[in-house]
Length: 357
Image 1 (tube, rainbow, N blue to C red):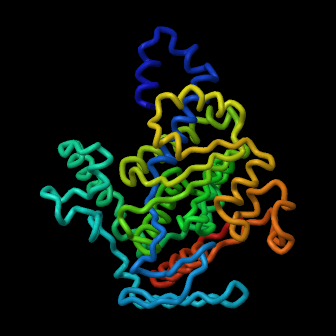
Image 2: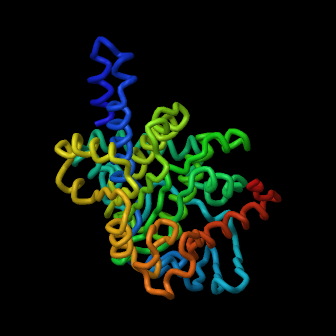
Image 3: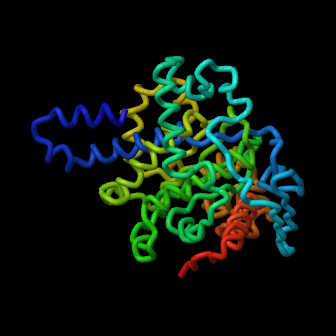
C-alpha cells in the first residue's frame, strides 16, 4: 500500500503541493503503522523447549539446558544469572519445525505464506532474508556485546510486559516517545535502534519461544504523536526502514493489534485505508482514542494483574491491590532476564553498559 501510494503521488504534476498536504502524511503514517503491526515478530503461547518458562505477566521459572542456565529470583530479591557458554547463542535462519526441512527448496512455511504460495517469490524473499542475516550478523547477535541496550530503550521505549489473557506475548511500542535528538547527542543512530529491536526479536524468537508459527499481541501507543512528528525526516526515515526490515524478515505474525491514544486524524486515515485491507487484517486491528473504553479494553485483553500501569488513564478500574504502581513502568521478568543476558555478554567481552544520563 505504501508503494502504491508513492507511485500514485509521483505520477501527479504538482509534487510539492501534494507532499505538503497533511492528508498525505496522516495516510502514509497509518500505512506504516498497519504494515508494522500486521507483519511483526513471531511469538506463541505454548511452552517452549528452550528457557525460560514464561507464564502470565512474564513471570519465569528456573530451567536448565545444555546451552544456558538461568535462575531468576523473586522481584524483591537479588537477581542471579549464570551463563555456561554465551558463545553457543547462535541461531540460523532455518529452524527445526519451520517447514524448511521438508521443503524441496529449503523454504520455511511462513515465507511461502507471505508470498501466497508463489514458490519463486518465496525463494527470492528467503534468500534475501539469509543474506540480510549474514550482512548484519543476526545469527549471533545475542552472544555479541550490546553496550547501547539501555540507551536504545530510553530513545525508543519498546518492552514486553508479559502475556495477554490468551497467553500470547505482548509487545508495547511507544512511538510517540521516540527521541531521535537524545540519540544523536549520545551517539545512537537509527541503525542502532533498529538493531536493538532485532536483538529483542531474536531473544524472543530463539530463547523465549522458538516456535516458528507463533503470533503476538501488539500495543502501539501513539500518545505524543503529532503531525510534525511524521513530518520529521529523521523519524520518518527510521520508521520506513523499521517497517521494511520487519516485514521482509519477520512476516505475518500478528495475533491482535491495539492502537491506543490515537489522534483523530488516525481514525480518518483508517477510514480511507480500511476498505483496501483483507478482512482477516481488519479483524486484528482495534483503534482506540483514550478514555475509559480504552482502559477497559486493555484490562480485558491483557488482564488486570499485568496490564502496564503507565498505559492506563483511570486506576479506579483496577482493584485496589492492583493499582499500587499505577503510572509507573515496572520491568517484567522477561525484560529483566533479557537485560541480564546482555550484561553477562558485556562482562564476558570485558565491556560495560553505556550509562543513560
